[in-house]
Amino acid sequence: MRFKLTHRLSMLIMFTTLCLASNYALIGLPQIKLMDFIVFTGGFLLGSAYGAAIGILSWMVYGTINPCGFVPQIWLATMFSESIYGIMGGIISRRFFKDNNLNDTYLSLRIFFGVLGFISTFLYDLITNVAYATAFSTPILVAIFVGAPYTILHQVCNATIFGVGFIPTVMALQKLMGGMWDGILEK
Amino acid sequence: MEFLRNKWALAALVTLCWAIAASSALGYYYYQYTDLVNRLGGSLVSINLGVDYGNGTREWFNGTTGITLYDCMKQAGWKIETKSFAIGLYVTSINGVKESAEQLRYWSWWTWTEYGWAHGGSACDKYIVSPNETILWYYSSVNSTTWEMTPPP
Image 1 (cartoon, chains in turn yellow, brown):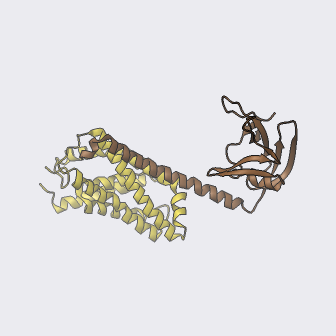
Image 2 (cartoon, rainbow over the protein chains, first blue to last red):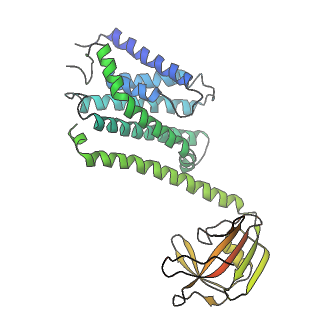
Image 3 (cartoon, rainbow over the protein chains, first blue to last red):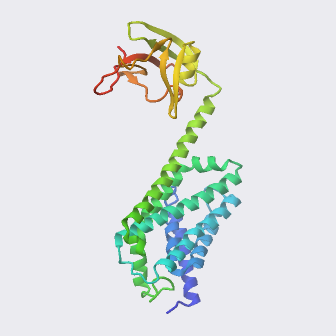
């Protein structure tokens, strides 16, 4: 069974609002955000295109109404690099989990998703740092290295959130929605 | 997801993450270091520099200026012989007094703290001196068992 377009769109909007609500709620904690995890989960469950859309739409709002200010180059970079999580979620779900049960090798899966969270965050930070360097005419390597403590914190937090939270979240959502997704969990 | 059953594959992935984080941290500290050296480039620091030949002769060169300890040694007019390694310069001789493997005596530098002399932790050309720091080069004898250097008296 496949979800209708209206269902998919409503889920897209729900994931996006969840991203925004969690981002504003966690605004006092730099680099500790649930948005990346939610975008990845959305991509995993709905497919790459929807995952990317969740990332882009979330940053479209969060990047515009942001206490840190609005810089167009960085806004565009974050908007599109956030979609990495959604695209990666969709690719992982289609390529690896089509015929798999998430209960298999539970610990290994946790480690795998933790690593995935780390690497996708590394890519995200790399792109946004390059965008920052371009926007403020700073050498790219300097921008990358000066921001290293923040990026490491971001990567480690995301690895932890992905590793600990991803499987229970997906299984809970699967149960909630009747176990029929247009993705890896579709039987 | 067959590869997830291979422990080595998982270990390789975790090691990759560690390598990324460690490389970022390395880059950060390297940038901080070079930035500090560049900023200090125009302002020389004055220190109290001494040399103790281990035979009761100790000379002080107070008010010696430089950025690194090696700069200060050169500014004090010492005759220094060194060997160059990746981690920095290794001093083999000061003012004609050479290290002696037979007698187990080597040159080492010590900085004065509120607890007494503390052994210098890095090569002299890599160590950036602080204002009014007191540093002594000491011709230390080395314990043949523990390879521990004798601190200056």
